[in-house]
Length: 486
Image 1 (tube, rainbow, N blue to C red):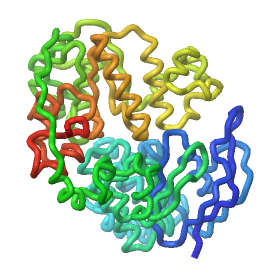
Image 2 (cartoon, helix red, strand yellow; image 1 turned 60 degrees about the horizontal axis):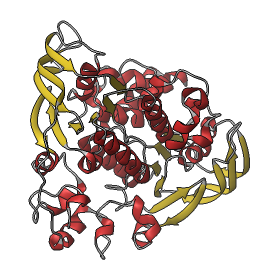
Image 3 (cartoon, one colour; image 1 turned 60 degrees about the vertical axis):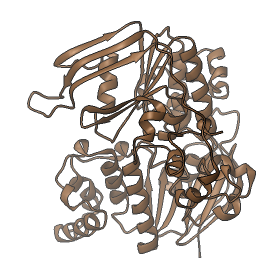
């Protein structure tokens, strides 16, 4: 049975020169798990929102959309924007109360849903106190509270650490297989998803260019940029770490290079911080140094203190003990790039030359909030590039970026380091970290438990490491990126 169908679907946002969607023809059958991929701005979010009528964006639409779903649930890229209650119980109850359900029926529904989604022990916790993964699970549970037969998710993994990502993927697999719910998910990463999804749909410039099973598409060169990084390394085209490990026996690595030391530009000594007088320490007697002309990456679980550390370096937060010293002007990009937008159009935020450099020249008339997630990231970085900074702090800079845009970002950051700038990023994107970093520090429960040169740190971590390290661990000493391979 066809659950969703689009026929020659085209869509254009107001005042846009080009169409966001162009002649999209797509059928999704009941019970399928469909992975939607494509470059930033390729039309993924627009297509997903059009599939749920209540969320359709404003603009000019042509073509037909057929939705045979009885109840379609939708989870946005940032679940926090959808929350309306203070705690988990209130969030799950909100829609039920609006439907004027009786208290007994509400209690039964919350009990059943919270049990399936492993939220029973979190019902009375405040949403702001939950980890990123727990908030994502809550958003999915709240969307599914009316027994939806279709679940649409727009980049649900973008801000999650590896543990939370694995949990969400496992949960979505259960929703699909145990409940028979049709799942349509957009993502910039295929790892953990591509091996069990029924279909991989790839979009470019508003059109569907590939639509088939992963086993078929892995042999298509055009699809390789969207598949796990190890897939293209071998003739067997493995789609999972498990399948890639035997293939990796033939790989060899380059020797590690010694990093030439440079001047200290950021120094923290015995820094301790808590958000409230009687609250636990987020950072505890933390010491850290960053160097001019180097790229430093801070990794760790959601809630480990990474963003707090970045804010202290930026001077946004003040530690209650310890010393912080920075040499030069600091620029800071928060996890939510919208905090940097102060104008009504992109053209008012950045110059034409800057827009061209960051591939935003086609969006000068747009309101910044109308851009895709990846375009917002690029705009925020473009705004900062117009300031004269010596130290650049970036919180999840590769979030919502496709693999091609990540390469462009990596090239930009490496050029900054060559100019002598200090770059410090917080990221859950461990493959990006492995590609660009000079130094990496692993933050756990407010303290630095491991720090040093990129290959040393990432080769000594089992869970917070790269795809290349996972497949080569048994054969190579310290390769963590394709650049480390011969």
